[in-house]
Image (tube, rainbow, N blue to C red; front, top):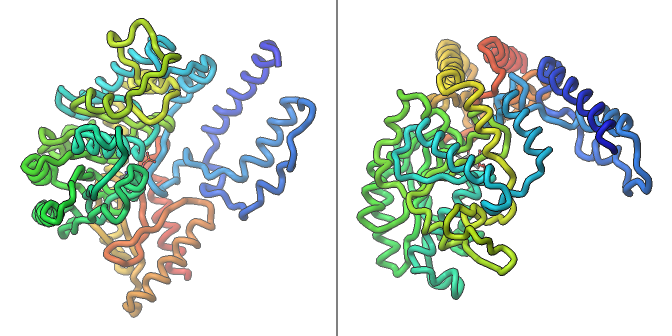
Length: 469
Ligand code: PLP
């Protein structure tokens, strides 16, 4: 394809992209295809000769689009959002065009220096104190892995990296923590049986006294506690672990404290939620995902550390082909994560933050929280529905509980049927949860284009579908 042809198709694609954003509501939110429905339309072998872009694009529309779940649909309330925005899309186009691989300062100084600056902008925006230094990871899962590995190296004075893992090390989180911590402990050679799930209080927050007791017990049994992963905004119910009380325990016992604020971190741009950071002085590392709730395309996970040298010591490896004359005088982000190669991910942050400005970003996040507050009110007012957990920011857990159905298993089955029926309408998309063992329906508000009317419509669909079951 020459640049003349590229230009023509690119203009056509940009028109399609704008049309898509304008009309995304006409698609079913969750893909309605059956397993194998897309694979069956893709030839088993690659084409020997090139095909015209017109044909490829036509197939994109007829084969691919029906198999897409529309995360940018304003009625997407499943999981947590992976929202984006027009400025972020524009930056991604430029990033793809440059195609720079930004592993070293020298392989694109602008990418490195922009990343340093953007992570500091974000730090200020969410109220993290000075002294935290940021790096963009691909995901919160990777950031938690980095935290566990760095903590492991600190606890073993670098021996695990040199000689491999030996002895029993332990990691701590609550029984509400995202499964990424357990997965990362497996990868780090800690073992999932050495992840202690600390019980929670009535608001689903980790109990610092129970953490302290578990640490004492394990230390006495000869284990080496290395890391506590506290959450601000757990995935199920959005619970907020108390950083002050947990941090005090970690400090006293010399254990690394990582904070997983993957979703809720974006809400910290609102000063009224900054109290969640009380105790941040005890925290060693912190992650939140602008790619969830800050209008920035996936992937963009903001990982902060207090001691970048500890991170670098954990990951640094210097083969001859990666040496540059600037080494030691500049940041080479390849030493800050598992991966070597890196995309220019800071550009989309620059575009998003500059294009909206912090004040507008605050308004957008606050609007999502207001919508959830209103939904909470509607649920409270409905005699046959109930909240399954306190609303957390823009996350609501609910269940249908009609009069006369009180047997727990029957209620679980009824709500499971309700969720499937709602999602089969294609008009909204919600996901399930278990709250104290019982089935709950989760509504996570945070899509860029969601307005009050979309939440109202979703609530109507839930109610009408439930009453028609
Ligand atoms: N932590 C929390 C609280 C999450 O909700 C999620 C995903 O939703 C993760 C971690 C994992 O995020 P990622 O997909 O960025 O690895």
